[in-house]
Length: 325
Ligand SMILES: C[S@@+](CC[C@H](N)C(=O)[O-])C[C@H]1O[C@@H](n2cnc3c(N)ncnc32)[C@H](O)[C@@H]1O
Image 1 (cartoon, helix red, strand yellow):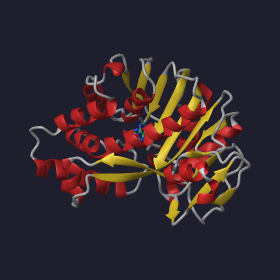
Image 2 (image 1 turned 45 degrees about the vertical axis):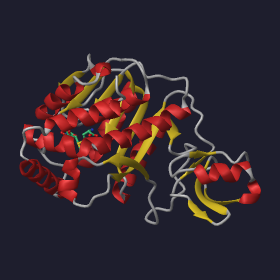
Image 3 (image 1 turned 90 degrees about the horizontal axis):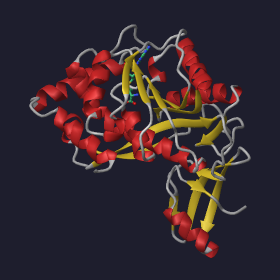
Image 4 (image 1 turned 180 degrees about the vertical axis):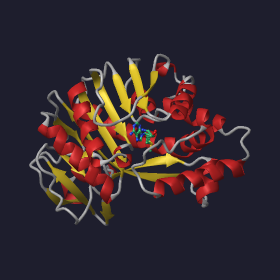
């Protein structure tokens, strides 16, 4: 079997077969317009198959990579743990379910909840290309104050908080905390996305969760509000639809995202995390780190540090970092 990322790319390319390229591009442009408009909305934005196919072909590779990266950081903090069940809330076409299968082998009971039936239908159709999702359930559900979730190991909430009212965001995070052993929340890597993640993080910690990633600690975020925002970047191969809508010829683009992964059980977060793209200078690497004691520092690693210097040259934005302090 090809890896899930490849099967997903093939399945998404198949969606656009037979759809005139101009029509697909128009559907994407309409959706982007919607997403720029006021959210939350009273009714699903993804109304029909054309909308959903456009959303999936255009956005799913990026949300998949962002969630895969967040789940990878969770897996690093809890190497022995494999989720025995997964509920993806506001799961749409199921990007996070694909990401779970890319991070952990095997199958598990999986449920995708969303209020947009066309998204669920397309998600089900795409999932036929991933044997690990053969048993997944695609269920219609509305996220609001009345939401309750069945107990499960892992709840993911990917690119959804942005579409909810403040009250519904709070209700969703509370419901996830009540149901799950681990909760992973992913948002766009914007100042607002970070703010929503931070609010969810506070709620999870108050509910007794520990932060597994990206923070090396469960203390308050050391970023002074309004001065910066914690976010990361995932590389996404661009499809021909991407190139058509956005122009340009680069074979990839970088999806910026903010996230939190938190667990009810003990975790060993990384000692520090690289929170910006490392700056490589002659004979030295500058690393911006968030540290276990809850502080932000810039570490300068020079050639004199030997092994550590070689490791610093390979370090990437978002990686864990251990300088052996
Ligand atoms: C931007 S999409 C993200 C989809 C998917 N999680 C991903 O990462 O690709 C947001 C999803 O949230 C769903 N959604 C928004 N508000 C909702 C609500 N109140 N109840 C249920 N689903 C909702 C939408 O239908 C849509 O599928």
